[in-house]
Image (cartoon, rainbow, N blue to C red; front, top):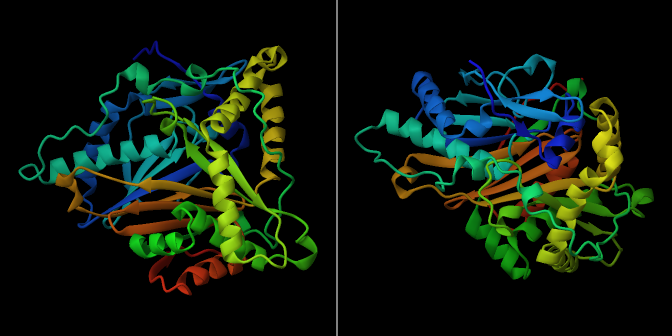
Length: 419
């Protein structure tokens, strides 16, 4: 079958392509746990139905002379029982001509692993919910009615490179905070490019109550708890370095975009600890700094930074084999300024007709350091923690700091090989 359509890679995708490696695969996982065990044949049919509604994801990444690009592929999604770690490698020489997402299942859980160059969390959640809808519709045809699960946006709107579409040079003189190289957690990394994954469930009301007591947002509360736990584990000689938390921001909250592709950037909040710091004082400062970083002017200025490299003639004309090392160097420099990442997917909602069939959601992201993904479904607030480190001290301190507040929790963790 001949294809005539191809898609440009957005500038965020180009970073993921250049920086992916066996540990930090630049993939992420979104999961949906049902109240019943999964039937593989029905899930396979559901994925194929959902794929027809999202042709933007039925693509393979190819190398051009100047940039990578995406082209539709005849490769069909195949559902299998879960047999590898979350966030597997979905882009390398073995994936030529293949899709860059996997759907697996484990008992009553549906896993959607996505290569980040194809989509961000917002697009992946919508695609997962399409799969869940079609699964439940096929499994319970007399109970699940026809439900519009998408925004109804056109294929052109769904495929839009919104970075390019909303790029403007205005506000480029907004003063953006300059960040120093940050503290990085000490200790050996796990062998064999492994990652440790931990899932923590809490009652969202309990967490919001504690955040309100400190007069900060839920995101600021969780991120400050992590920041304080990192500081507690920090060698004294390293305490001259700041702890910096990076947080992805969904740009659809700032621009009227329906794209199913990447449309986010990241903000950093940094703190250089003093001996007089308390959780309350650090959380208050964190919350204020985060609010400042999320003003429309600051968000627009950072989006300008994402796009301006493409406007440099030398970069545009350089062949791909020269561009990729430059992008890797730039990514490495930015990584030096970040200690850990906290991403809040927010409140996940589904139509009322589906909600009784769904128990929970969770998400993980690959990392070379530590990454925490927050999500909320009904009363369930979940942390999906991924860590590249052998030591679990920071994670233990982080979870204990929440438990010490009286927040009850349920924990799950994968097994790793320590040596």
